[in-house]
Length: 241
Image (cartoon, rainbow, N blue to C red; front, side, top):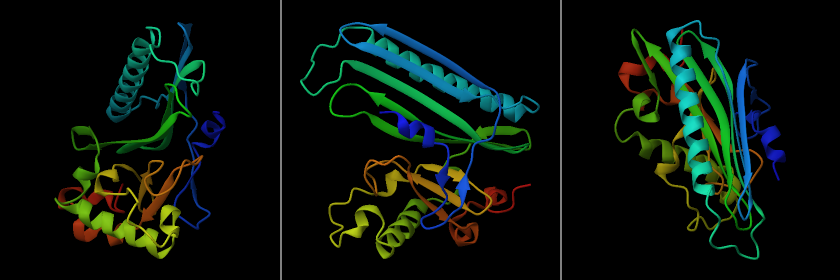
């Protein structure tokens, strides 16, 4: 059931290329919980520890640790009571996995990629791919979002760019001539990484393709994004130190 976890940290940068984004070796934290109610419950969390040589590294480590523990504790608390409704298709266990890897680290930018898996009963579990990017500009440290990088109304441009690419290359669900049922929309533009080659967008399962062992991704070169870039953050568009 969890074979995809071993593959989660090597992702294709874009359709049809051989480029990959790999994890960076560093110390990591792992903790696990297991107990039984009327089902067996297992929860595990694994996340990296960036060497704390800068305030940015310390900030990123604290933020990642806090989120991982909160997600773990919430799941364990919810599963502590016996499950009230067990259906024939349910398995006899409930599972939570949080796995995060470091994929970029320099004095001004730290990025993580991973996934969160949950099985709460039913036919199969759910996977959500995670990206987290932290930056330092002067004395300000923060986690970056796409809203920070672009001007207002940027989602419309990004969505149209992505959908045009999917349609012209017949990617995922867009291999079908009827696109009316496809659920991809601008709110699905949230998971991203800043790479040397451009902005890497990652799409959750069932957005533009079905349940796979890795996310659907699309790389957009920075020079195509200048028209919608936030002038205050142009440093991230191919001009990182």
